[in-house]
Amino acid sequence: MAQFEEVSQKSAVHPKPVGLVLQYGTAGFRTNSKQLDHVMFRMGLLATLRSKKTKATIGVMVTASHNPEEDNGVKLVDPMGEMVTPAWEVYATQLANAEQEELLTALKDVIEREAISMAQEASVFVGKDTRPSSDSLSQAVLDGVHALGGHNYGLVTTPQLHYMVCCQNTQGRYGEATVKGYYRKLSQAFIQLTKNVPNRTDDQKALLVDGANGIGALKVCEMETYLKNELQLSLFNDGSSGKLNHLCGADYVKVQQRAPKGVEMTAGERCCSYDGDADRIVYYYSGSAGRFHLLDGDKIATLISTYLKELLTQAGLDLQIAVVQTAYANGSSTQYLEDTMKVIVRCTKTGVKHLHHAAQEFDIGVYFEANGHGTVLFSKAAEEKIQKLAQDSNTNDERRRAALLLQNTVNLINQTVGDAISDMLLIEAVLAIRGMTVQQWDAIYTDLPNRQLKVKVADRRVIDTTDAERRTVSPAGLQEAIDSRVKKYRRARSFVRPSGTEDVVRVYAEADTQLAWQCTASLEDLMKNPLIS
Ligand SMILES: CC(=O)N[C@H]1[C@@H](OP(=O)(O)O)O[C@H](CO)[C@@H](O)[C@@H]1O
Ligand SMILES: [Mg+2]
Image (cartoon, rainbow, N blue to C red; front, side, top):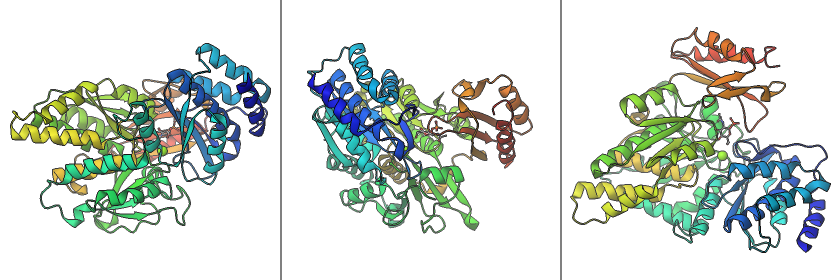
């Protein structure tokens, strides 16, 4: 077939380095950008097949999120804006690792196994972040998609791409499949939510944003006019001079537990940081004596779920709400959610796809990774109940008001994936509606001191985990060794797991005093033990 000849010819322009093996990990392929040209081309091919198979638009995002500027990556987005289904992750790995002469066979194998009709039209949306390598790599994706109906969106945040894929596949029911449509939908919802808040001062409207020198900075600037001064942003690390994610951005702030470089914050001011592709956000402020206070994904989940629960009560709607976390969630947050808020809490493996999936099981599923990646999912039934009540003129004012707030909240949230811009607007709206300062939000519960480290080991794959990654099952004896170290500290909890995005083992520990530092250090030592290396 002519199509396959074209694949052959074009793949020669994007040759695979012999013997290079890469894995579709937690968030797609991710490594140094120099190793990715052939992977991009092949993901263009695979996205085209996935589109033919699902008869829907598929997304491809070129980004390495919070990783260093020299890295890059690629991930596929399924029709409803969610991460690609696991079976196709396997195909992705097979295609990426097929040697040059095996590529056609690998491709035909997918076509056969999935019974794909090659006559079916395909549509692929391609997006990229601001990394220097993203230009040529997204071009390689487009070469793979070639004449099969690809649409190149150019520079977009990861969540904007997910959003537009979902809009396209719902024939516009989720919104208009353009960046402008995204700005309009979110800003209208934000303005509706905040317009009746009494006495909102300029201080309450002001927010400092660290754009991580990435795509989020560009896009939030574009959006500002739509917000009509209802939010006054001061943007730092806007990409005009600094390096992407370097000493700034959500991951740096969360892991280092300190303010990013380049943000001029004064005591008590509300600040937030995006990551390199703007699908994560964390908040922070500088307290008395310059002490740094971090409000991470756990604090965000708590704020949002408290707000939603209160509205559900006011609206008299009987909808089940749950919060989904990972092992990295601070023990204090879990305790607060379960014991004080009395909401259901679930723990899943690391990686948004796991949290997203678990959140889908509830009427309202709030999911956040501690690092600030998360969103809220509303079931179809929940959305319908909210809508019906908001339109019911026979109901009393309090119920109606709560239902209208819920309705606009649904519109403000990007349900396809965690979204720094959408989450920021939601948090700002919630703080305004509840008349809360960032300090009051912070005081909801107190984090247990905690620490996260990366340790390089010979082969991280020797570590196998269970119980949502909270315990290790191999190598034999490792969990016992961890337990014996952890029991020396009060309220301590600790675990190790192989990263799905980097060649490291991650070590986490928390304890009710700063001894969490000692505990992580002792586990770091353990990783250098013959058990692992
Ligand atoms: C502890 C941590 O922050 N892990 C991150 C990181 O995964 P690892 O599998 O830990 O490398 O990258 C993922 C993708 O961005 C993100 O979903 C996840 O939360
Ligand atoms: Mg990211």
